[in-house]
Image 1 (tube, rainbow, N blue to C red):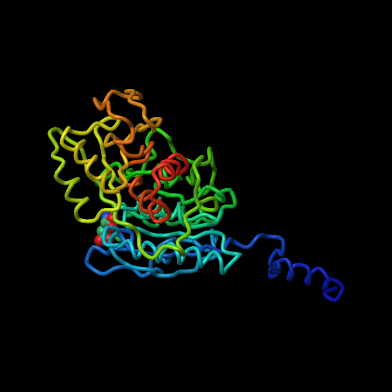
Image 2: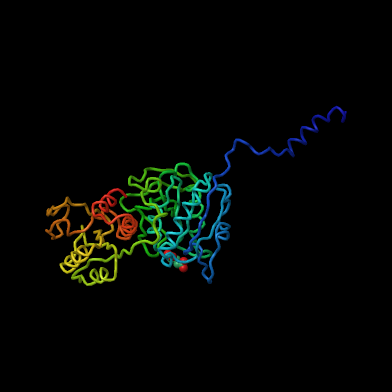
Length: 361
Ligand code: GLU
């Protein structure tokens, strides 16, 4: 009888031990490169810093999300990165995309303090429709509430998602996907610090699913005119703030010290003290590009038509022709206006061209 039952035995054996062959139709996870620059995300409390590979090892089951490659660019706080390093990093990302057509996206770690500046710089200089995702953490590895691992996992998911294409450089924290142009650090300590203020998030990576609600409207990445292969060093652009009774001395000093451009973080819709107003004329007469932004954190400095002395959109008390008022920084935060002005001045010093760029980017 056992002889007659052997087919049944074989079936039971196969059912118990059969390992299905890999499904050739199941898509392999997208290849995503991690390029680290440092910051709190890798800054160990007892001293020392995590390498790129150690950072990746903190994220459970990351291989389900992406096929990860790592590259350490730097391992320092964000404010310690030099502008030359920015140039090298952006060139490196351009090169990585150019060399590897199968690379889905790149995740860049950064310290959070100046992260929004680096992200906007990459948004304007990495010429591809594939995503660059900038990420970091507010808590150090190994401390209670370390947010680095989840932010990193979300960042890899966003960088690998086809829906992220064509949206420029993205900043991913707390499951929120922000545009590099809009996002800003709003709190010195809190985990929930990166916000796009009134514009809101572009999408969400919460719950392991990437979903988008809108696209950035301004020019960026694949559609940028800024080509770093032609830039050896970035021009010097300083930011000066307006406040009650502010002296124009610092505007004059920056001019005399060789600033190529100035961003004035004006009060309200571009208000400056009388002394600063005179100093701005001093700077403009010496060929310094002056961009007016607002220190309020929200709102827009609208360009005025040439020769116009009107007081729109807000009465800041200056009735002189627009030529004396510098370039309108539109809705860019002063630190972002500086990034754009550095790039713009590396291609032109023509006032109308500079204003065009502030309207388009
Ligand atoms: N929050 C700091 C930064 O933005 C990080 C400090 C550090 O990495 O030592 O870079």
